[in-house]
Length: 176
Image (cartoon, rainbow, N blue to C red; front, side, top):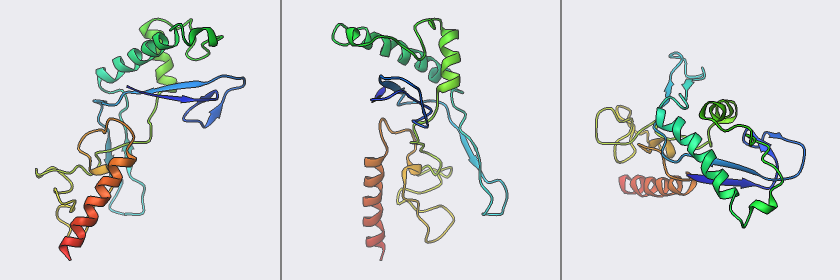
């Protein structure tokens, strides 16, 4: 679980502000089991791909969303911070059951903009790129970003992506 705290009332990744004063806490389940899909819409490369993230398609992801809300509530109930909080505006103290909290998650849950795995690296034939980041079946093309990660990274993707780029630079230099 990763916790993000913003010194403002925000929803939908900061795209919407809520009137008033306070802070926002968002949580992220770092090891989701749901697997989405990216497919070509047509042979025309100018067409946008078909993307189905399949958020919450795995039961563990749904369970962890509820667990994270409850864990955050436990943290905020601690004596060091509880006196500083006037009210829980979202999801709101009145939402307590799994069903009630799940309704909130379905409305406000989303992606942390760290998708990975669409060009999975590996040694097997189902991998898009090999262990030297070369796209299988296309000479001279490598993928150098977080999409090669075979599974979700437990945290932000910037540092691992920089490491992938450094490795790719070494691979490309050694191939020249």
